[in-house]
Image (cartoon, rainbow over all chains, first blue to last red; front, side):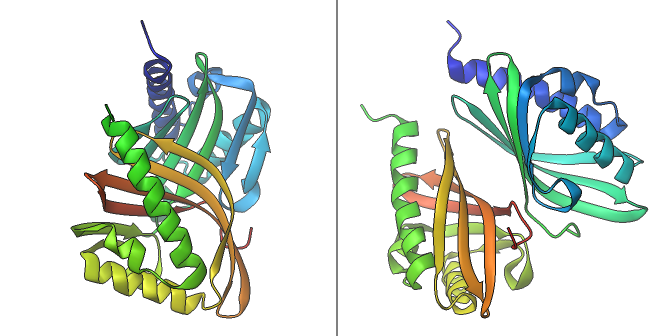
Length: 131
Length: 131
């Protein structure tokens, strides 16, 4: 029998693979396909700071990210995965050029899972974007 | 039988109570007593940004936090706890005066547990300190 926790981890890991692909290439469709219609997300700063609602808004957001980092964002290390029955947290580091300037961050992203979809996403920053 | 996960959650929750008390009052001793000698912690910005090692360094850090927020930091909401066998993540919101100016943040803190102690702490920011 597959437990809730196992399913949650499996779905979140699939989602994270698509998320990484989106960051690297700007192709977000596979990730967007995994989101529930009532998907919500939290982002710390800028135009999308605070709570955002709906899949359309998510599409706008991830396209905006890929426009800002138009040479792609490279995930350089996945430091830790913390997983419960409903939520999986990925702590990772990434590097990119942000409007042409070198950018490095340490990030914690939270995926909440419902069934075989991701219903919420929250992002937190572990650095000032320089280290 | 108490499982690893149950123990981890219990110890982290005890630690979090002492952590909240420290934030509110500047009294950190009970929290510090729960840290392993080889405790490490990650903080995103400022004088303590990056990895820090040892209990003495932790003491310095938490005293520094309480000096900056010398009227205390009030935890206004505990939004979610995500707990695995080794790690417990607390997502919360807080409010304070930072050098006299209103400050609000959304934070994710990670406690790694070993036995009945906390062996690592990582902090991530979910806002720019204004909301």
